[in-house]
Amino acid sequence: MGRWRTLGHLPGNISLGRLLFYQQAEGVALTFPLLTVDVTGNRFHVKQPCHSELRRPQRAVRGNCAVMTVDVYHTLGSPPCRTVRVLAKLLDVPVNLKDLDLAGKANHKPEFVKLNPFKKVPTLVDDGFPVYESNAILYYLLNKYAPDTPLYPKCPKARAKVDQILATITSTIQPRYFGFFRPRFYDLKKPTPEELTQFEENVLRGFQHLIREGNYAVGDALTVADVALVVYLSTPLELKFASPEKFPELAAYYNRIKGEIPCYEEVNRPGIELMLKRIESLT
Image 1 (cartoon, rainbow, N blue to C red):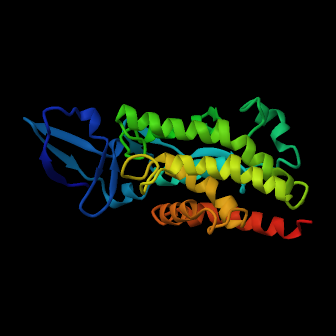
Image 2 (tube, rainbow, N blue to C red):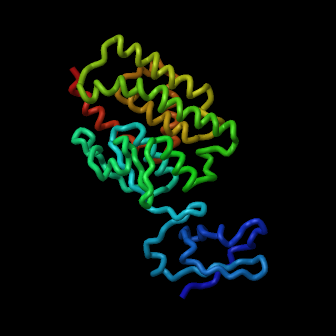
Image 3 (tube, rainbow, N blue to C red):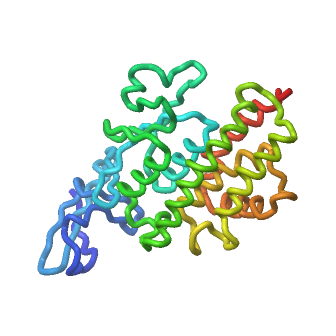
C-alpha cells in the first residue's frame, strides 16, 4: 500500500486538473493515473503508489497532455530532420525514429504518401495524427508538449523574431543551401569556385544576418531559432565548406551554441559523420 504525504498548500489559482505531474523528493515522476489526491480545505495530500506500480510503464504528462512516443520519419543527414530531433530531445518527447530510404523511393510508398502527400521528411506522427514540414513540426511539439518553455518565448516581439528566423531559414536560405549540397551528396561533384562564391553570398552571409551580435539569435537565452541555426550551420562548418577564418562570427556562434545543447552530439554527430564519409569521394 502507498502512504499519504503532505506536499503543501494548494494555491488558490490552480485546479486539481493541473496536479498532473509532480517530482517527488526521491526524484520519482508521478502521473495523475497513479495518484490519489485528498483535499482538506486548501491543503492537498498525495498517496504514493507502491514500488511495483512505479515500475509499470506510464505516460508522462507535460502541461495537460500525455507524452506518448511519437514517430519521426527522417533521414540521418537532413538538417530539418535533425532540428526536429534535437528539439524533441530537449523537450523530453520520446521519439521512435523511422529511417526513410529516399534513394529507394520509400517516400513514394502509398502508406507514407497517405501521411505526407508531398513525400518529404521530416514527417511526424503523434497517436495517428501526421504533421509535415519541419517548422510546423517544431511548433506542434512546442505548443502541445512545452507551451511554457523559454525555447519559444511568450513575448510577442521575441516570438515573432523566432518565427521570422525559422521562416527565413526554410523559405529563403534552404533552397540555395540544398541547391549547393545536392550535387555534393548525389553526384559526388566538388563545387566550382563560382558555386562556392554563390554559396557564401546567398547562404553563409544569410546566416550571418540571423545570428545578430549577441550570444543568441533572439534575446538573452537559447531558443528554438538557435537550435535550427546550429544544426544548419553544422553541415558547412563541419564539412569544411565554410572557413572559420572567413566567417569567424558563424564559427564562434556555432561552437558556443552547440556547447549549450546537451544532446547536440548524440543527435547531430551521426549525420555529420555520414556526410563526411560521403564527400570523401568527391571528384
